[in-house]
Image (cartoon, rainbow, N blue to C red; front, top):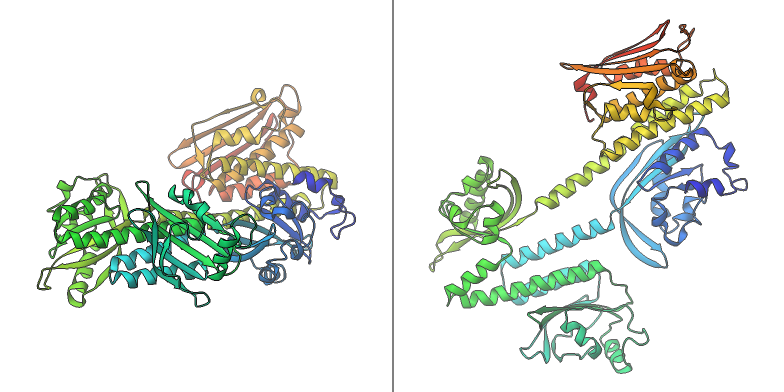
Length: 635
């Protein structure tokens, strides 16, 4: 995108020739082009759109047409939702940060819902007023849809666990699925033992189409799809009028039940086509992989539920059959008496706690949870005894290896034939990874905002000092570009280390890398020390200034000149000395430039220490003292 921007003839655009662009635009664009996150600079009152390579795929067939056009044209499909947010950033100089926001898109010739986390940051121009907006975005559609699917599946699981009449539960679940997908009809059917017919036992509609419950021959709706369904392949019909998809007879049959689009997901067990769940819509519709995955998951759960309830009726006559179902369940199942002493658990629960069943049975629940957790389970038990029903709560469970797993638990009482409570059974689901993923995502969004703001502040400081008006403009531009390059080098180094920090040796290597043969003229030595991001950026900028000054005026300006760079650690104190030798005689300057000011003021402040620069006759000497604790901090 940098090449595209340079090659485009900007003279005929409101931005004007590229060589006349203000430095604030150049700086913001330089940061955006180097970013691995989708980043765009929207400049001027009509927000002319300049973007990096990471943003290009988000534009679909609007790339590269979008370059230099107003955002209102580039994102015309969602501009009514974005306009006020851009104006807030531009006119009120306020940052806008949104997480998992719904944006209905119309892109690449199709309409669909998408979810985004994005930020809009105001960018000041040369006169200090806001001249543009820096935007960064992440497509969260997949994560949001998975989270919504997981939430729906959890709600369905809770309904199934809560019990009730099977027909009523089936109707409730099909309604949940239909409303979630926004379709006209959903249904669930089972095949007979011979696989010749299937029966739609329950059918939910939104009221605009007919209920088609009943028994039908297999292939009644699409005979050509039967072989694929027997292999577990779904049927996806986007438009019932599509030529070649259905015969005239079948197309008329679909039309008669008010169906233009259909998604049918078969359930195959042991090679037997056992059941099918379907969704119909009276309008044409493109089905997504998330739609298919949802129906498959619901079908699986419904089938498990039906199998379980049927098995439970037989279990009253056969304890052995009950035991097999109990052992094969994927959920975490534990039973206990009213004193909360564990009476049994399934292999999944034992594996989750990293113990054998024999090590768990007979022990109290308190042995596997914190005191607060045991008080919580006791409270849930009292609530069931006093009020009946089931309880649902979250609980941290300890494993043998010392780890902690987060479970969501649904539990109910077990009763004797007279109805007297004699114990409880609990069904849990391990949601540890899901919770960690949500926490990590929030941390990343917050960290991104923090880093962008800090970087813009640093660039602004460099620009103000570099173009202070005391130096030739050409020299000022060159110095500014070199300092930006040093800043970019620091960010590249920290990015490779996931912003955890960088070693002093790495910082030195990258800070002097722009010099001629630095490995033979600069001798660096010191113990292994890893600095935090803030200290690392400040130090690499300071070393860049020292190295540049030495190459222009100091020891490195002559062939015989050398630099010794040594650092040491004693207790919590980090000391670093830059000493030049063999160069021209040194005289103290009449005024302090940007480099010296940064070293003596900014660097000292960021490292919570002190920094001095001495102009000894044989060469410049810079000494830095810092708090090791502050220098290594990650914040």
